[in-house]
Length: 255
Ligand code: BTN
Image 1 (cartoon, rainbow, N blue to C red):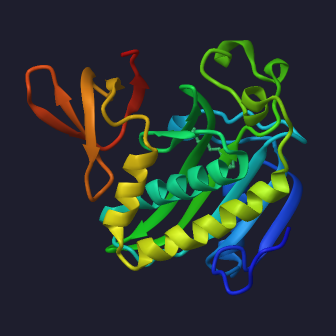
Image 2: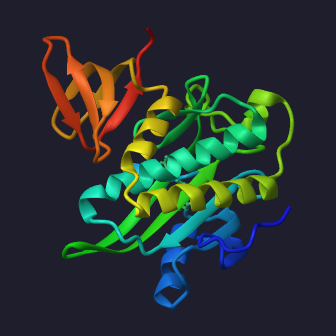
Image 3: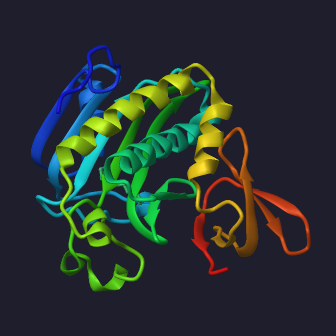
């Protein structure tokens, strides 16, 4: 399956058998002068990185490990929106290709039946009032089986194949993600923030749910109400007050 011409994303696509991390590779390529929109894909990663310093399990042959190197022309205060834009693009692409009702958990996890099948790690360099460079790393569990998933995370992780019982093509998924990413990224650059946030809310399994939030210094149980223009999660505490959450680990609680 090929890509339409004229897209900014995927003008250059660099594919490796093995890298430490496609995020690190994408950052190197950007420094070497590759253009914004360069896509790096690997069959496996030896040091796949997850959010909050975690490891991203990256076996060969089954999953998608892909990074997009960007020079976004947006102010740093909208940095979180880049990640929200990315997860909107990926979730939309996944739904279109697989017909699975993939949901977003704030800020950027992709879930099926409340189990994680994908995540996004955005790494940025900010200089003064500008985002100098950004790398959006996308990891999706495509064809992993139950046996491939480590015991410790069996309750919280899944894959497209585990849900649907069939294999999916990584190539088709890559093409769909690049096309959607190009579209949503253009909207971000054109400051169509409301369109992005509305779509995020539509795809979100977080809004309206009771959530537990682990912050650096405390834990909260609250109802997720919305996200704001800068991508912060707005929650309502049991005493009726509101808080805005910028970073932290969110667990969806059973209704
Ligand atoms: C998360 O913790 O949810 C984010 C996981 C992001 C994993 C992807 S796989 C491709 C890219 N390269 C990395 O080292 N990490 C991201």
